Length: 329
Image (cartoon, rainbow, N blue to C red):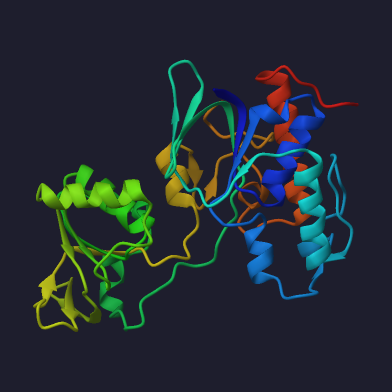
């Protein structure tokens, strides 16, 4: 089956994108939403205190609604209920607990979306994931003299023919290792546990295959307690006596908390500094691939009504250029 639209993220932007598409004449059966959490609107559920007011003019943005969905000042509970009702009333199909790890543009101009549970084809892809804060950093001190050798995203520079340590045990750590090996680097992965329980099956199998062929060294049950400057390079001191100190050219931390910049860049989305390059209709440089919600609002993120409005903008462009649909006047 080829979907008309696949939406990545079931927050306000993702839900409203589907609602706008249905309002424009796209069948709900031809729309798929993929969400990595166990429920929609994960950020609101996790980070908003109970009974927290959700203000329509968040960060001074004008509380003006362009499309079908709109919120005035409400509470956290009322906002979630409103989004619940949107899913139910529009018969939206949401695949929960499913993680997208790659998006490929095919020769026939359709997209293939790869997840940890399967592959899906679609004419249009809309990315509606949020933005997180600063990257998580280790507990131990990093000598200032090593700052140029420490990274939290692999998009920050080009790594070639280098000896690199990746620290972490999630999907980002696996993806960093795979990419760095592909670029011809000598890569070691340090993880504090023995099993990679936080990775999806594909990422876990990929790094285990790299280890088996000798292209990746994995230090299981390894805990770093100190970094030292060894002639300008990081010397890593481990808690465990099984692991003697090792000197690397660079260290890449994959400890969570980073923005989706690396994921978007691997898809091929162009960036200007820290911001994705978007047209006025929130379309990326890849035809048929759109960013809505916080990713289209700038570095500070946007309001829920901006999420709704950006989805309206995207669907208008999608109907004009790609699908047989039309937003009602």
